[in-house]
Length: 176
Image 1 (tube, helix red, strand yellow):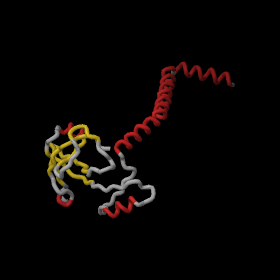
Image 2 (image 1 turned 45 degrees about the horizontal axis):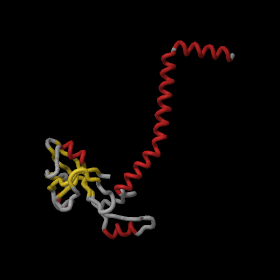
Image 3 (image 1 turned 90 degrees about the vertical axis):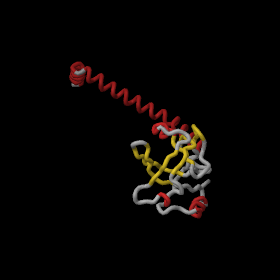
Image 4 (image 1 turned 135 degrees about the vertical axis):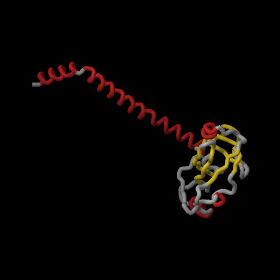
């Protein structure tokens, strides 16, 4: 019985040799891909850790729909295990660039956490200056010294969100 099964198996393999080789190649590719991903995991973790340490990237973000006060930030900083708590602002606004509207995430720059990497220009120091993502700047054709004007949706006044609406680009780089 075993000999008959073996003979039948060999006949089937001969009839569909291309299919058999294809299945073996797919299995070999799958095993190689899995092994590559598994072996690169430690290097990826080390690279991420190094990047997070360089930019002093936050470990956790606490957000409030009604906002948070300085007292809230102090209370979070007082929790055991919290090394540093830093407040910041974030909002979603629109930018008209050429024939397109872009939805922009606008962040305040932190003093210690989430440090940006400057690749061109400098970090803003005045209220009417801004720092933009280098990929966005190059894809939209902006350069250092250009001005951008932000706006909100129709339901919100910009003065409720920002003190000014027009900014001069003084720097570009990478956000963590």
